[in-house]
Image (tube, rainbow, N blue to C red; front, side):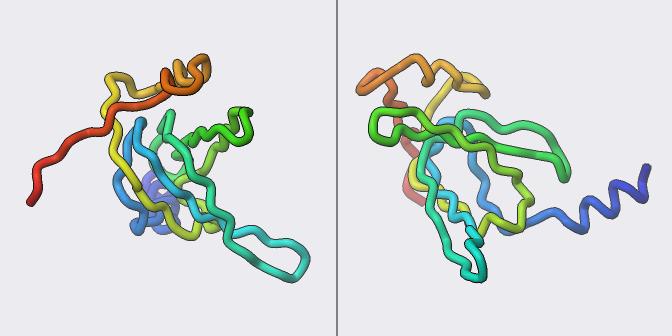
Length: 117
């Protein structure tokens, strides 16, 4: 078991920022189309984080043209170029699935206020 943990820790990424459910993030994803490669930006609210070690994932939700789109990203995927935290949200739950039923202003998340350093 320790050998398996050691192998999985070697493949884990350490360059991702610390973010929580409720935060608005931009996920820069590498897309390969034929022999070309490009970066696609997926901007939305983190509604869930799950798992630990190598199998950890997070779910990002956005509304595009009135349709809710959710995408699940593995934390340690080589297809993720970078993750940028835009705003910190203040939520009381670790899974904010209730955003699925809310539309417009009701789906807003209060921004967490931090002290200047």
